[in-house]
Length: 582
Image (cartoon, rainbow, N blue to C red; front, side):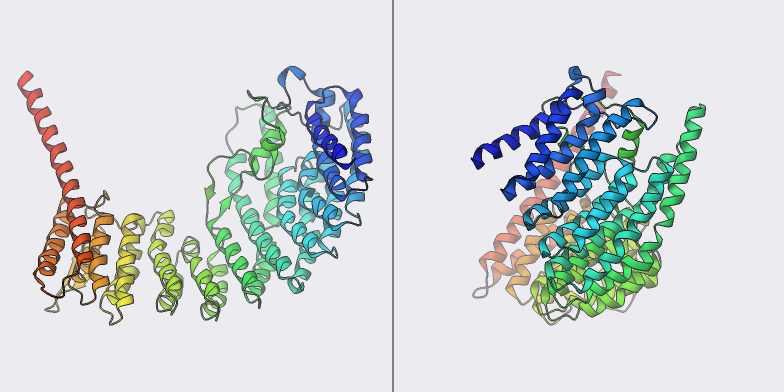
């Protein structure tokens, strides 16, 4: 009965975690081989999961301590250890199971292998890297489009596994060859007839971009001062060789990955183009993986955890491995950003509105990779151009990305993006507020809301200033926050009802924000009270929504003002009582 064999496969998967007796391992290997030949494709696919899971726990069968539970996963013994030969021979029996499943007649089985090659690579160790790389190469060229797509998605995870498992010179050589082996096959998929495969290719390229450039951030980890012992010196020497080898692999960024992404950005399918844009966005944000966490675990012969109830597989999976807060670094260089800008400019004129929206979503990430004002001005043009788009969603996205760009510049320590707000954003705000199109005026209010709610504007006490010109033509330097509130206040008497009511709605939304101090709060109250009195004085043109939002804004700001005054009174009373007691 198929249902019985499926239940058995589930139990075997759980038993594999509890192996602490080497005598039981041959029997489990036999179960893998039997599942491999099962007539049911779903069970043959399950054989792949059982294979890597058993391989992951093989060291426990020889070195493990049952008292520590299944979470105490042991690493492979060193090659000089007598137990290494026993573990190696069992691995020699498990690997053929995976290779045969990779040639299975059912696409569903090959799909399972393609999705789990990286897990098998982690489980078997560095001496099997080349075999598993060959396995993935075959799956990338599979006849089934689902298998090709899944194999491409697995490629960056496999590269990460190889780089993370580099502990010896031979493994270092394997790490150097992994990209040279897989990238030529990836280049061929750019002409794949299946759009889903090309989407997977774009996603994989973004993962690789992030991984390769992020490797340089690991240098600080391996150059930490030691305790003066000789072993630390040897370890640091090994790490320096490791880093030198990794730096060589960055050449693939300029020579292969950037050109590949540029071609995908020009793909005829909008889904592929959007995936390529997301890949560039994610790479530009530079979310660096903690590769060192795996390498450091390799230096420790055992790992212990307090809780035995969670499967060890959940701790060592690619997706759920415990990491610290992600490290953010600018991944793309200035020249690489400049190379991408013409492509993004072309995409901003694409007939598909979702493609235009995706093209502008990348702006905050790209700004984090730049230092030159000229480059930033070119990037800003992309947002400014799409702020006049005919589709409302594109206009809003362009406006939001222009406003949020200052947050990316703050990562360079540039006064919290105050210069970006003063030089780029406020002129566009003023242009929107003076536009004859009411949609542009409402867009300006939306930008003000985004700026203040996301703390993109420096407070008044900050030294940042922006130059404004009054009605008499005189110029004055004022804080950016005051300039932004003045623009919002100028729209309180707009001829369009939707614009007037949005003034009150925006002020009510930002009234609680701590960046607003007493002077700004009083300004908001004055503006909204004037709007309210003007609106209520109208006999026929009075709008109840404008009145409602105006009253809401006054209520929010006044409650904030009262809270501030009460806290100040309490502080004064406390000081007075202290002085009296003294």
